[in-house]
Image 1 (cartoon, rainbow, N blue to C red):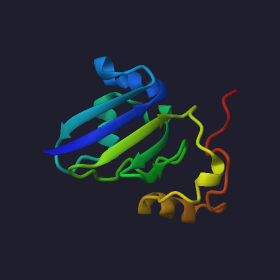
Image 2: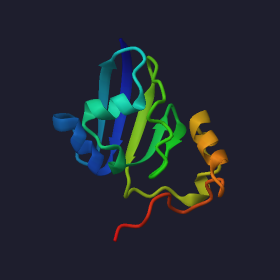
Image 3: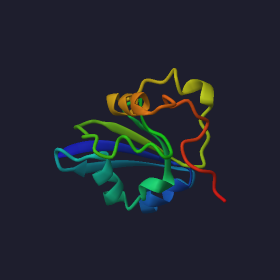
Length: 124
């Protein structure tokens, strides 16, 4: 088993149940060794399309519409922070943030190299 520290921000805090503090939640979970971010989301009951920016150990791992982390393996002591997709993160910090190697590769594979203000279509 591995121990994880999970932070849910904004309306995602509701997925923490009675541990929600309203605008955020901190969870300490034990999960099986080899657990992925996708499996963590499933355990929380949190749909991937509801989350916005995700950090793993301070490294940017996913953005809305770029779920590059779903198969990212988590390790004992990892800290995962997940914001709601409507939470804003200033554009100018995106290229200064450390990223997981999977997200870097996702950007490199894109024709636009990830230079966007949004990675999903606007809600209609």
